[in-house]
Image (tube, rainbow, N blue to C red):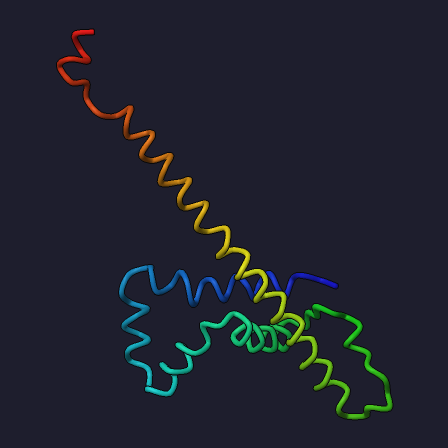
Length: 137
C-alpha cells in the first residue's frame, strides 16, 4: 500500500473545500460565477469520500500512482474490464483513506484551536500595562 495518492488527495480536498473559501473573496466570486449545476456539484462534493473518489481517479490518471498496486494486475480472465475495474477499486480505497484523513484532521482541529486560543489569552496577560496598584507593589 502506498500513500502518495491519499496524501495529495487529502491536500487537494483541504485546499478546495477548507482553505480557498477563506482566502479572500476571489474564490467565492469565482464559485458564484459558475453555472448553477456546477455550484450544486461543489456544494455536494464537500463530502470527503465523494470528492476523494473523483480526486483519486483524476490523480491516478495524471500520475499513475496506485494506493493498492496489486490492483494494477487484475486477473487476465477479466479481459478489457480489468484496467477500468482496477482504477475504480483503487479510487474507492483511496477515497476511504482520504475520508479517514479528513475526519481525523477535523477531529484534531477543535482541540488544537482551543489550545491556541488559550495560549493567546495567556500571552495577552503579560502584555497589558500594569495598573497603579500593581506598580505600587
